[in-house]
Amino acid sequence: MENGLKVAVITGASRGLGKEIALTLGKSGYNVAVNYLASEKEGMEVADDIASNTLLIKADVGDIQQVERMAEMVYARWGRVDVLVNNAGITKDSLMIKMKEEEWDEVLRVNLKGCCNTIRVFSCFMIKSGGGHIINISSYSGLKGREGQAAYSASKAGVMGLTYTASRELAGYNIKVNALAPGYMQTDMGMRAEKAMEDAKKESITGKLSGPKDAAGFIVYLLTTDNITGQVFCLDSRIV
Image 1: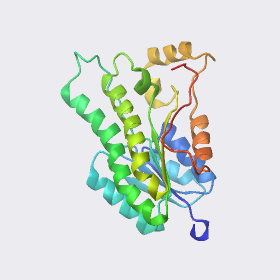
Image 2: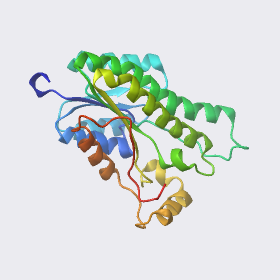
Image 3: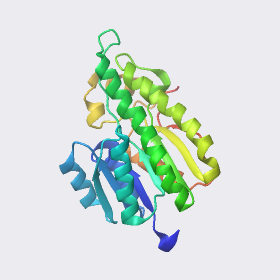
């Protein structure tokens, strides 16, 4: 790695878990590309808070052309990509019989297609750099399902399947692909569903919710490994 340069791209990095991952990797010596879509002010604050060199990029991960432009900006700035964390995601909770088709389509477009878009584009740059790590943020809902979250659960289950396949296809290029199910967290998204949050706390054998710092710290550890790929790590105390 030339001059010790390490570059990480974090999607959905302006708030919540993505923000914590970006800050943690910045403190760990990475140059960080902070991706956001709507929360520009928050994204700027994250970029300002990171001690290392940063690049703030507005892009919709569900749009392959915007992802390609984002990758070109990162490569033009640093000439390499070592880490991709697919954190961008949305939810539009509704019972299946009441869900609008456009709500289903949008959740799958962002959460699953977006993850596929970034893997397809950024893996090409990782190959040029000699390898790297891709970490996809999935969800406990993708493992067990959740009432009122058909689209979200399906998208996050799809992310796991995508992780398994990508790990096989990219292993020969020294690219490790893993997924995390970080548990229910008191982030902006988690706080919007108070009942689900309370249910998660009751289901946990510790009686506690998960925290973004735990997930970010685990990612830092995973990036130090050379032979872990094709895995889904459940960072939760709810028994699957």
